[in-house]
Image (cartoon, rainbow, N blue to C red; front, side, top):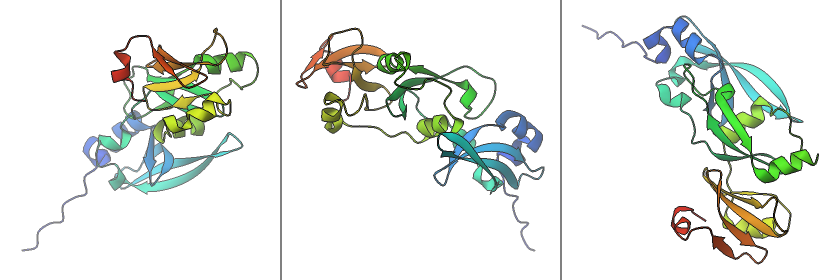
Amino acid sequence: MPVPKKKDENLITQMGAQYFNEKFNNSYFLYEGKVLRVLQASPQGTRVSVEELSDRLDDDTVSDKVVSGSVFKGFKVFEYPLLGYRKFGEHKYGFASKRQTSYRGFRLEQISVTWTGCTRALIDLGVVHGGRLSDYTKAKALLKPTFDSMDDLPKLLSGKISGLVLNNNTMIEPATGKQEDWYAILYKQAQVGSINAAGNITWNDPAFANVVNL
């Protein structure tokens, strides 16, 4: 006797399309390296309409697509990335954190971005635009972050760039409100050390040398 083919299970078939749409509509996820936003799942759970975001002159460009329901095998597809420091554009750095929400999935409206001290100073001077980040710029920086290394420190010291994002927790930028040619080492939004123009590091507490991965 032939064995019945097992139904393809995914989040939609498990929780129902209506509940899935209520909880995951407007959630972002990465698929094949692209930033996608959920629109609506089909009642059968076999297809999900999505928007693919791209960037053209810093304006959101959206293209509607359909992906298979099998992409949503579990909640991992909507998993929040490790948040913290990100580069959101030229001379534009911020610290991203999550607000509490009853919705499921990775949602941009639940992400708060606090500009770093140097970025805020550049915005106040009119050097950097401080307006709303486009959805694509924000989602890409959060979902596909790029990090620097200490090999890039000479670029910072020479003024070619205005920040080094070493990882989610650590970045270096010109110190604000202090003499020139000093750079702040930031760890989870607190200054834990400084670097002078020669590249010499001074820690506020020697213990931070073991905590901060430079």
